[in-house]
Length: 206
Image 1 (cartoon, one colour):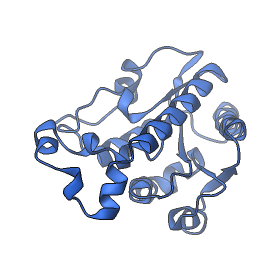
Image 2 (image 1 turned 90 degrees about the horizontal axis):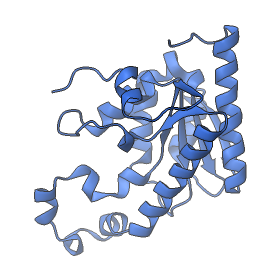
Image 3 (image 1 turned 135 degrees about the horizontal axis):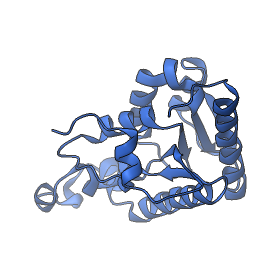
């Protein structure tokens, strides 16, 4: 079992940027629909997706949705690494085996170690898994890291988790209609966190 995940552990897995000590954890739904993420190769070999219940089969066989969501998060990550030059990353970028640290614990550790955490919620026709993972992070970190977390969801997405984020955790929630608008809203949020750290509104993490 690996010890606690540190900021140095995360940075060691990433390339350099203009502000490579400013970590931005980019989260999204792509892992929630991918059997390869939650099952080992041996377990996966013993499962016939066609034998799964209809709704679960639909989620786990939505290969195009997985690819589209991951591609969107990669574009968000690339945009942030270019402008304003922060060290944006996805969970899969950090070389930690889920056999050593489970996915939910990793997400908590990444969010806790990051200067900012962004949940990107595109419309995929369903929200399975997103609420649970986001909720576990918010439940633990809302009081200490709430100012560092934002939900940015496509305007057509509806979710109880989004409504709860506003009411229960007083979280910043943004919407977008186009990808250009998505990038703009995230850049503004990250710039705001950077400025607040610089001028004393938020504690500088290191």
